Image 1 (spheres, rainbow, N blue to C red):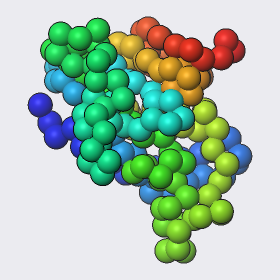
Image 2 (image 1 turned 135 degrees about the horizontal axis):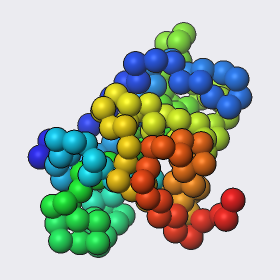
Image 3 (image 1 turned 90 degrees about the vertical axis):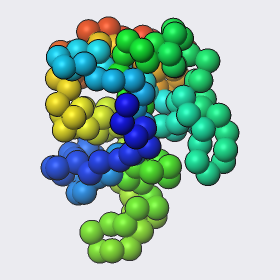
Image 4 (image 1 turned 90 degrees about the horizontal axis):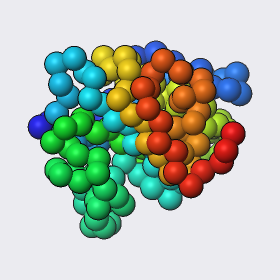
Length: 173
């Protein structure tokens, strides 16, 4: 299994719903379980507003256990013996992905200059991450609360990218 604590930089500028674009977008993410040769066993877990990429492992700064350790792991409902699980920190966050604390093109932190980010922008970044990973279609996209909004947005805006959607405790649109 690869090192779960990792990040990547998107190869292309990320277009936003605002009409702006972000360059050099960093996506912090964790993976659990092995990706099969066909790349058909990937599950994307989208986190809630108060979550992060540490879905099933200890947060390296706070020492808190993963926020869904009871659900993700070997033999658990999201079984990492069968599936390759990816959980990406959303853009606009301050927990590893590009956000207000990140450096802008001028070398200074974006701070209040950081553009407004929509749920669809978050998903667009995750789809670009999946493209760079060579994952054309997810087995499942899963999320609760704001993560559920992301799962629904992925299904609505990128309908060929996930075979299944599990949206928990989220909006109905």
